[in-house]
Length: 457
Ligand SMILES: [Zn+2]
Image (cartoon, rainbow, N blue to C red; front, side, top):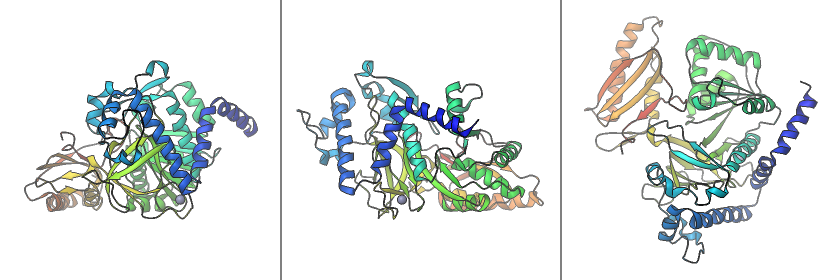
């Protein structure tokens, strides 16, 4: 279609989505405020949410009063906000009814749920306006990560629910077409499919690729190992996982491009995007408050890893205030050199469900196992599952066609057992399961490491 006509249609659609545009302008202006104005702006948004929660949400009426954040007359004391007990997923399930705003009959809202990459998914209620915010955060975050409207984008994404063939609405497909997006479902990543994905990328030649970390890393490893040449996009944005330094190097090498890390979730939408300086991920203060806490609940210092606890400022139908999202993260010790006031999350260092626990209670980062397995030539793909503190199961898709496979496997198995026990303790049982494929989780993400010990905690 003629680009002029297309941009006119796009403007018409955007105009009909006035809320998205308004929120995007809010975010765009917000990142350049001065520090004092920025703090006041966020305190105002937080105060308004807390007031609503105290008035309309039974769970918070109780807990905000208990913590002294709101007094009986409704006056808010933000200096006591850090006394509010963080909300965990088990409590969200148990107190679901009490977490709903009692004015739902007057609101436009919809059910949503987390993907449930481990354990049970969490059911949520979102205001309809939340969807406008999600689009706005994607627009504003995209601009921070050097993506402009009108540039072609390829999503390597793997949500079963979002992408089941034939289940997409016409509106969703039209929207993608208008935004110059194409989607590849990374739900399955067999060699044949990965071949066809490379073909598609080479034909479509997208300006940007936006992908699940694990999926694009799998694809890059496949490209490199197969000696293929893949189109080089201007940027790759990675999301829904922890981008480790060796993964960034691999993507930069194979795709000959710049990689932008992003941090988001279904509960709280976009929580961080890297800018062109790559010093960390900017947190959009207008939509979310991200805290990093120590085990004892106190605020972690800069460059100190802790539990990520988030407060969504844009959803009143079922507010999530100081919600433990299940990730470990670390704030940077200095503002970004780009001049944006949005603070910098240095990185998300792991999911708590990726962290293994030994029989003596020592924590072992899932990343350790990535290194152990990446060094094995005979391993095509792998997944390490901790069943209990004393047993580890390694699921492996072997590379049977590797010359000298049998000997490599024999030596490799021995080495893996040794290295796993080095971290997990000599009493740890290591079992191997050789499979043809490793299925993604319900949300379509590939997980290299899963600890089931936390599920039962
Ligand atoms: Zn920056």
